[in-house]
Length: 255
Ligand SMILES: [Zn+2]
Image 1: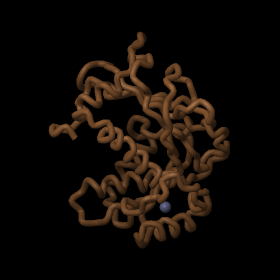
Image 2: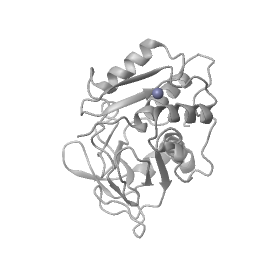
Image 3: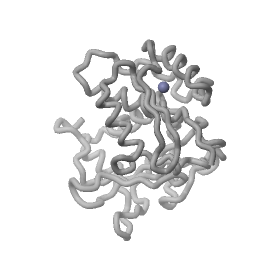
Image 4: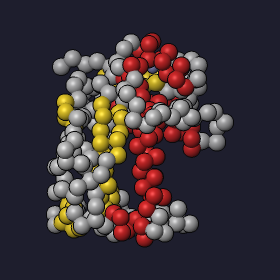
């Protein structure tokens, strides 16, 4: 199999770097955080196509205002055999570059599964590996039977449990998901679109234009009580998620 570097790797590196900046006392500006895609459902950008590294470095500089992109990169091969190029912000501490590189390149438990990708979505074939893709996502209505950790199904209680935790403010908890998807599409070659969910059987009911439900469907039920497993997710092309409704997803202030 031909091994080639992928834009996804560089963008994953950017994401990780950006998150670290956001959590760090460093005064450096988080990458991309002030660069929202407007409108959210924007066309896929040319720079997301896998051109040369130099092209991508310059594109990232242009997009973020960060100079010197390309001076702090790492390369390696994932546990499943894919060569990746990770672009960190210039000046990223070498121990952090080392830590992330080991996570992705397999010195620790495999943390990056490059082989299990979306090959088909409700939009159809995703084309070649490394190309940007589009995904729909949805909240599963309460009552849809969801699998648990060890067989047996239970009705989803996403809405009732989250409403209880968030003071009856549905928009408040739903926006946490929307913000997450918005952030992902800022830093990865994926565009997300929220759609309604018709409550079809879960999982393995891929969305389509005529049967509104997401490629990624999110439901909740008790999994193992508080703590332990927080959620599980099916790999693509299923992609659905079950959250543990027994967790305290809200903050102490109910926000
Ligand atoms: Zn790079």
